Amino acid sequence: MVSTTYNICTLPGDGIGPEIMAEGKRVLSAVGAAYDVDFVCEDHLIGGSAIDTTRDNGENVTALPAETLQAAQAADAVLLAAVGGPKWDDPSASVRPEQGLLAIRKNLHLFLNLRPVHIYRALRDASPLRPERLKGVDLLIVRELTGGLYFGEHKREDHVEGAGVNGRAGSFASDVMQYSEYEIERVVRWAYEAAQGRRGKVTSVDKANVLATSRLWREVNHRIAKDYLDVESSDMLVDNSAMQLVANPAQFDVLVTENTFGDILSDEASMLTGSLGMLASASLGDGTALYEPSHGSAPDIAGKGIANPLAQILSVSLMLRYSFKMDEAAATLDAAVEDVLDAGWRTADLADSATPVSKVLGTREMGDKVIEAFNKCCAK
Ligand code: IPM
Ligand code: MG
Image 1 (cartoon, rainbow, N blue to C red):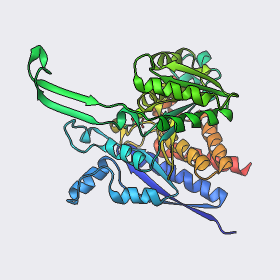
Image 2: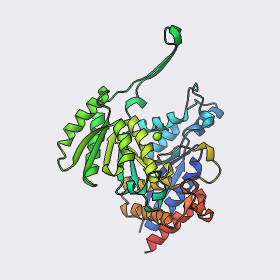
Image 3: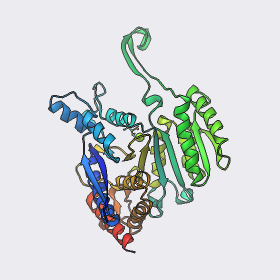
Image 4: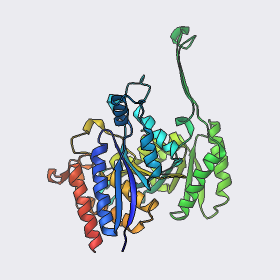
């Protein structure tokens, strides 16, 4: 039998990125071996490491080199770890690592970002919420990813008459938030389709009592809801949603919202799982899809070998599901992660005072445990 080959553009990025990416790749080879698929990974630069390298080479300083974008466009899928760090945090810097991330999302037309929030039974106690509040929690955040505030014009002016204190000259800044109907429609429609395969509920989150973009969002949501009468549809204001996510998170099935709200609410929702280190994401659109953990580059623990690789590994699972239709392999990998946690293994971020020191693993060891559990599941 001739095995299938998939080319993966891997972007380790900065901070803990390379460490967790190493585990993502090892898991990918284990999946490939079990399912007779050849995953060929090729590393490329993005974020702070791209800024440093292009600067050192005397090239145009950029967080997304053209060569990386071309490789991503040509690949079957992109697997990204994390970008950013204090080294590149100077607010006056003209090029910032996050620009690489935004640029690759925009250039690959990844207008849809999925962040599934799944509660692992073994991690009930790791969440800051009482376990009874977590009963029945299983939600999917659908975040618009290439519009809104992040992509509107960003402006800064200094020495503006009257912008300083006491009527003196000072600085002024603005960010433009805009949405067109079609940008909203393609995301909201996707949310309804997803809900049909889940618990049949969509909550569309906006700030329609204040923002014009939100009023348009809500209007589009109401129109689309009519095409999916089997799906229960509701609107919720974003401030209320932030509160409901901790007060009664089980009420949500699919939560769909614009870029900035989705960024904020998904970090909040990650804590339901016990750690931001558990939240994977898939960014989909017209071209190559991209998979990445929802967390950042955690510079404070970079290089120590203690970062939690599970969000990266779970991003691999999303890639198997959405890009390669390898649903069984994805389910097996998800089950392997569940098994490892059930067996009591933890990375430092997931450990609490009740966790025995002997159960706390480093990044690599956690990767080993998942691969072992995956192979065991496959052998069953
Ligand atoms: C995320 C991150 C990014 C975002 C940053 C790093 C630009 O927070 O993926 O949630 O805001 O989209
Ligand atoms: Mg974020």
